[in-house]
Image 1 (spheres, one colour):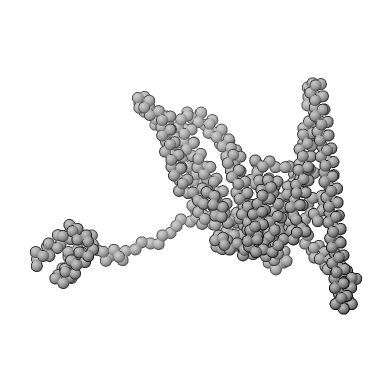
Image 2 (cartoon, rainbow, N blue to C red; image 1 turned 45 degrees about the vertical axis):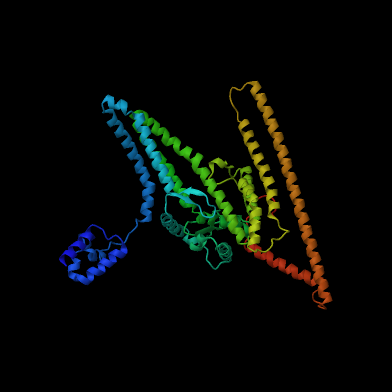
Length: 534
């Protein structure tokens, strides 16, 4: 028996019993022939304390505070820049102390090239690891901040805004809030097929500030709408387009994306600073560093950051149009909205209230470009309304007709503004001008005045045509109103109801019109341009 036990233990230690069935049979044989206490002595040393290992447990994993990680990523890069400067300068000093033979073998350029290759490989790996897919659109993007980190900042912004506008928050029982809330609820309820829409806790806050023409949505779903933005709207359909656009920013995670893009732009500077202070002497490095500090933000802002921001705005326009169309709103009002804003901007520039912004220096595309881009998406949006079994749109009201009309006015007014600016520049006195230059300047001024007169004539024609179309539309409405009244009167006569005569229908409709106009007076949209919208 002792020999048998020794043989089995040796076989166990030499891992002969690798087969599961063979091992189980051997274990059963040992159990029958050997007592349990002596069987425990045959266990390998690393299994003797297995029961005590089962009772061992670690503490619960605690992630780092998202706010701390956010600040580390944003402010840590600034510290990393100074570290790279000191490292580059220190390595240059060490390189200069090396023997000449080693310096020739390991020149600064070779070291810089090798180091840059390694850093670029690491940046490429870091970018691939942090690559993400944008929901709905499927666009590839680079994300370095987690959603929890952005939500912490959103909660802080929400608390700050609620504290700042505490006295101006509109009560939830007011008609204005109820109307805005119904639009938000419609956008949410008709887009439940999108997972993010279902997961986000959407909340609306309306702030009574007529001077603030703004609306935005925080990443945590907090919607802030100012009454100044509501006043600019000509119809509730426009407000649905605006809210759909702002909600799209939260759905697509654009804040998270913009912060990541800004960090990526700062991260590229870190190895650049190290190379500058390693390759150049102190004075030359300081000069190049000063130029870089001045030029790089401008180049990055105009060449990368602003175009990227305009791309995100265009993406939010398209997704917001889809959200509004699925909620059975009229997508044509999106074109009307941006053409109207373009006309307002041109009118303000004409009277000197503001200047027309250039698109390349703006975070948003121009109003005209947004109107044209969304108009290309109208057929797709209309098909989406049909797929969602939305009711048919009223044929008599076509916002696109008004949008095209306002677009002509905006183009004309902007051309006038441009010519007037050129005239102001030419009419400024300049000393020591020759007679030939003065004569050419006079000819140029004369031609500009002729162009300006033509534009003014075109503007007057457009205004006259608009007035005629408005009168024709009012006449059609009046004829339709009279025919409906006559028809209702005839129906009343044939039914034997003597009270429902034409006069009674006339008085009833007059009463309804007066009630409707009174209701409109209680809340009217701001009219910002020189001709009627009706």
